[in-house]
Image (cartoon, rainbow, N blue to C red):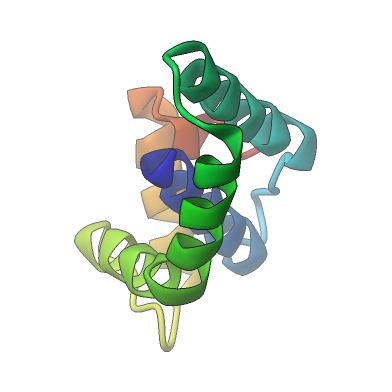
Length: 103
């Protein structure tokens, strides 16, 4: 679930900073919903998933997104649109969740 949240948030950042790309909110919601349903199907407690997700989003998501961006050659504090677009294209080519929610 955390990986999906990081990929979706990173894709949203890329979509916001690359003029030639967009962010597909409906697809992103679908990936998050699927991750949630898979965890529940594997026996995870829905309330625990919600609590852990809230904690992750509040405390760890920002740094995780920054790290993902930096690994892709994007400065999260001062993103260059060309770098964001290049990173987004690489992710689209790889077929990652991040790439699949970019349009």
